[in-house]
Image (cartoon, rainbow, N blue to C red; front, side, top):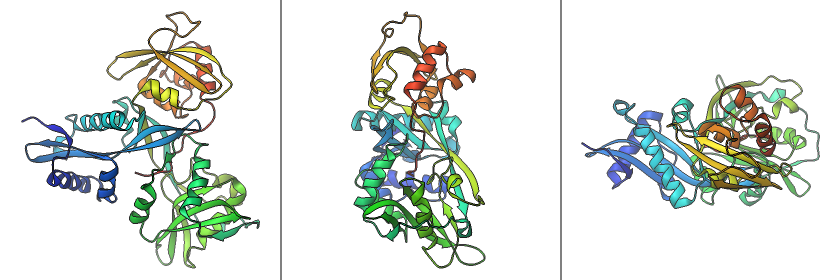
Length: 392
């Protein structure tokens, strides 16, 4: 019997997918009605049996200081007896096709403990996430000059949007995001630190029991404008409860490496690496043109992108003053037709995110090209480094 991959036909198919997600992850997606209302739910069905599913959420992500239309792949699950038959790939391709054609997404990102699976589909790892734990006794003294506040979401959004542009990966959170997170993060309190009348940082914190007594302050969101605000913000987190015995930063709430190494007088921090976020370019030409680039390199480079199936696509890239133009086919201006940088699709994605220089990729056997062209493209991508502080 044929397996159909598409949107759920009725509530029974949606519930069948949610049951599979519970089996795979030990919990259901956070507030599935909201995610399904603002994204696309895909299912794989044979007869009346749901064999898999996933959620595909449209948003934008910052790359090179500019928001790029993107999307997230989340809660991808396949029934254990169907794994290895290609359903995960079919679900991902169908879902990302919808992100591209219905929402204009140029790329897609996902959190996964199995990057090798996605790598076979042309995705690549951008950055490994870490959790951090430290004790309030290790906090540096507050230098003064800051006051603690309870900021509104508008002030937090302004600060976050300004700071997020300095990284490759943060989600430009859509309007529904804040209410969704508030509903699925029970007991969360957002604390801010003010420098005169300006919000210099904020943290969203919950508390959890900490054996054998007391609580841990669990940080879900953490943004600060420079190191000067960090001691005051850490102090506000520690004061979330008089029983705080440790501060826990959830996966990827802090970038890696974290700012703690430059802020603490005594570095007694426990770090636990989790798993990476991966990405792929759904539309190479549009993704390259939408991203921000270093304004100094100018010129042209030929680019050949190779899919996991061995299919090649050639582009002529020209760039000046931080803008790039990509033309499908043909050599770049001034270069012989035979000369081009040749990249697997995954290497292109990792370089795009600032995770892998092409000169290093060439040493690993993941890129081919003239050293001058590799260096020019690396200079073009210089700047922000990868960080995805958003969970979905």
